[in-house]
Length: 293
Image 1 (cartoon, rainbow, N blue to C red):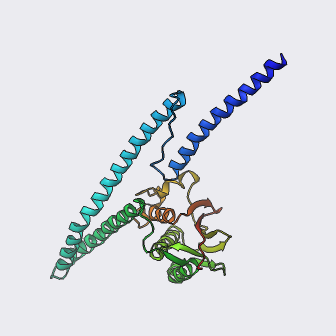
Image 2 (image 1 turned 30 degrees about the vertical axis):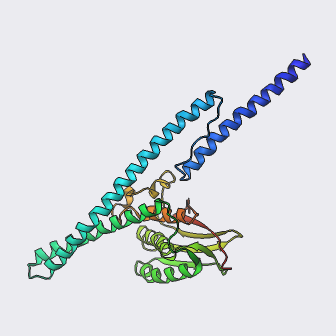
């Protein structure tokens, strides 16, 4: 009886280890795909067992999903690219029309048309930038960049804007060098978008705090406010293209600002997290530290 118990327990452990190993392989593949590696597939073996059949079915499903996502991105990119030229020509015609004599009502109509056209061009420009970053071609003009210098420059620009809106901007930056490998223009746009969002969605009297610190391998920047915040179940959704929450409909914007932010963070191998600031929103950006040496 003792021998049977030992054999049964040993066999159970072996089978359990085998099954758990297969499940962990599937789970790791799923995590890699969730992190953006759409080309990841499950490895097949020659045993033709149930796990092999499951892997074959899952790989076929993943292949189809990747093709559908690629086709969707291609359609979006083509629309954004092909529509920019006629819209730019339309803008030139509007400028020529605005220089001609016309009535006040015509001038008002032309002015509104020009504003709407500029918004459309901004959307197409943002879509093209997103497409280029999602293509995974690497960081353009990659160099060592000082995040501290970028944050000092941007906060100096936005301080008078926030003061005009009766908002308070507080800045607490680390004295460390806080360098990372990246594209300065894209990083400037990323932090500008985040500050623009904060000042647009916070009412008068709000406080916006920009802080930073550095660990051995990570630069961390936090932009926090005490405004209305974002519900927890919406915090991942706001990074999707063209998504605008109901309470943000009256605020100017294209719905692509946070999509661009997340794309830039991913391009720089970083991470962005939206947290509850109780009240308000806390945006935490983590970028790999890269020494100037």
